[in-house]
Length: 262
Ligand SMILES: Nc1ncnc2c1ncn2[C@@H]1O[C@H](COP(=O)(O)OP(=O)(O)OP(=O)(O)O)[C@@H](O)[C@H]1O
Ligand SMILES: [Mg+2]
Image 1 (cartoon, rainbow, N blue to C red):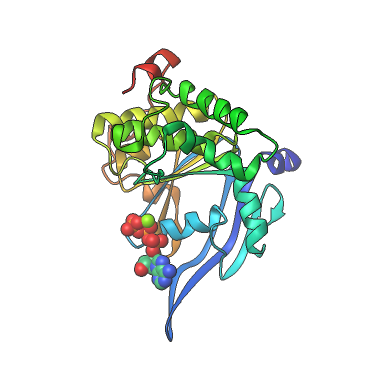
Image 2 (spheres, rainbow, N blue to C red):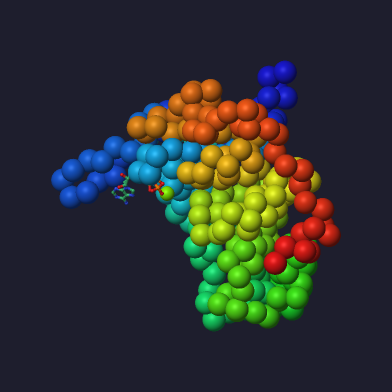
C-alpha cells in the first residue's frame, strides 16, 4: 500500500513558508503549507485575493523557491534547486496557462506553440517543431487558425493556443492561473471542458487557480488557502455550495465537439 501510494504521489509539500522582503519589512505570505497531490488529479486552488494562490503556484511550478520547507516532486526534493536546474525541470514537467494568455503578439499561433520546443527539443528541426505544434493545435480544434496572430483570434481561441503551447512538451502537470478570468461564461465552460478532457483522457495532472465556484466545481478536489495556510477540504468548498455543488463534472467534450469550439 505504501509503495503504491508513493508511486501515485506526484507532489508533497511539507511546511512550506514564503516570506517576501520589502525594504526592511518581512511580508509572510505562506505560513506552513503542507499538501499532497497524486498523479492524475484535477484540483482547484481557491482563496481570497492576496491569500497567496499565485505565490503557491510559483513555488509548485518551480518559478520561485520557498523561504523554508520541503517540496518533493516525483520523489525528489526540489525546494533548493538552483535557477538553471529549476528551469530545466519546468521545461520537462510543467505547462503554464495564464489569465491574459501571454502569447507573443506578432507571431502566428503555430509559432507561439512551437516556441517552447526551441528550449527543450533542440534536436528537432524548425520544420519538425512546427509540425508538432500544428498537431497539437489541430487536436484542440484550431487547425484552421494556424497562421493567425493573437489579435486575429477570439479570447477562447487565444486561450486554446496558450493551452496548446503548454501541452507541446507533453508535460505531466499543467498549472492554470485564472485561465477563464478573461473569458465569457460560454467560452469558460468550453475551456474547462478541454481541461477535463486532458485530465480524464490524457491523464495530465491539472491545478487551476480560481475565484470562481463554477470553475472549482469542474475540478475533482478543491484546496483552499486562507491566511497563508491550507484549509480543511470540507471547510473550503466553493462558496455557493448547495445541491449543485455535488454535481459531478460535465462529461469531457468529444473531438468533434472540440473542433466545433470557436
Ligand atoms: N514579490 C513580492 N514582494 C512582496 N510581496 C508580494 C510579492 N508578491 C506577492 N506579494 C504579496 O503576497 C500576497 C499574496 O500574493 P499572491 O499574488 O500570491 O495572491 P493571490 O492569492 O494570487 O491573489 P489574486 O487572487 O489577487 O491573484 C499579497 O499580499 C501580495 O501583496
Ligand atoms: Mg494570483
